[in-house]
Image (cartoon, rainbow over all chains, first blue to last red; front, side, top):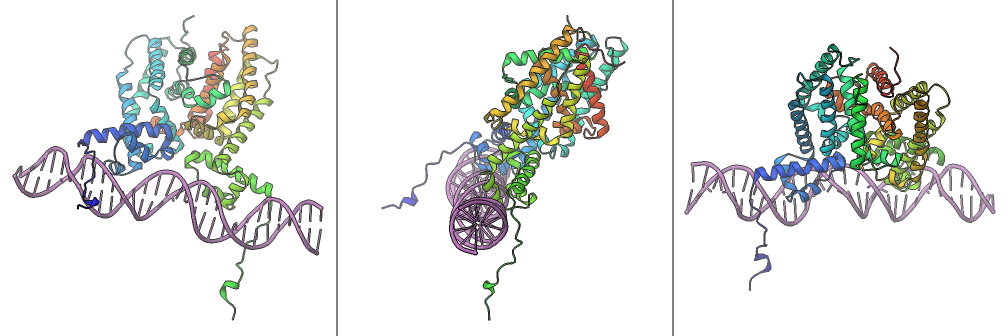
Length: 221
Length: 221
DNA sequence: GAAATTAGTCAAAAAAAATTTACTTAGAAT
DNA sequence: ATTCTAAGTAAATTTTTTTTGACTAATTTC
């Protein structure tokens, strides 16, 4: 009679596909790190969601830390590419300023993982972003473009002020992001559901109003 | 000859003091949870900083989770108490609005742990804040007071708008908090040190300008 | 001043996570 | 067709972190 140990286990026999597996791990990791932060993220959850073996994370990325770094690079590359498409041309400066605000607001609203990853990276005091020269370089052009828009709008008399581009950028980002970053606590505190689409639409209008009225651009009546 | 085991260990013999020990653990835990978030916080680091034994955390609080909850309650209670002192009286509405902005900005700037804890709590999707009825109740009065100020300022002709108090509150908080919450990533991206006191002073002026000009209150020339 | 209580110590156990070892085999390369 | 590389699996093992059990003694209470 044959021994039990001789019977080979019925293995699922997964077909091989390096690109797919690597991409799947990265994509799942974006969500896991966004949702739980670096320390809260679990290697095991990633493998389950990516339907692969934990060994693969070490095979493709080297470890949890390196995987996190890959995630960070990937989401920053994505937003900077989108920003680069948004050229402030020669149209009415007020309209261009409105585009700037609406683009930023909408990108954050539609790409939830981005802000969540940033939030966690700041919890870690920027430990990993500081290592990425790429992220640093990619961001300069956008600030510069805002500066030029401010100059032009002021020179043309469309804006009554000419604010520091960095301050304006921080303000646009703050108004577009804070309610998303803090939906849970702010929502509890003010007794409203900040994740409600209607609420967010109202927030969008308000954000545009605040920025344009600050620029002295006189919004719609 | 006497056996080595018979020699009693030289024990440091710490004097007892329940209040002090409990308060010390809580105070140290505020910093630890603020700095590392719930998952990043280490029980061991807390005990070292509080110069006590890990057993004491379980003795006084029950566990890591309950300690975190105690921390959250404590920092919210503190800010709400400060807000309550800030009564918007009958003075010029523009001045009162300025006080509102400056109070919020300064509180965040001076109480770094508060925003850091909030940031982490939002990472956890408000898991713990939702359990605290106290925090919910304490926050309503401040929003109400802002609403009254908006009414009064508009009626008196000091403000050209009468914004939704919640939107205005979120805006003031966003402008005061975002650069602190995201100092690491924003600083890297814009190539400036947002923790620099001079930078933060400029930010304070900018924040006041943005809010007052939005209210149509006409700032200093 | 004896008994009861509980603050505090020590060291180990339990639990939770990350990482690695050892092996198998699909598919590319020759 | 055969060989070789690396994609993939399974099962420990190591490492890290939280939690508990058993004991000691300082202070309070009666």
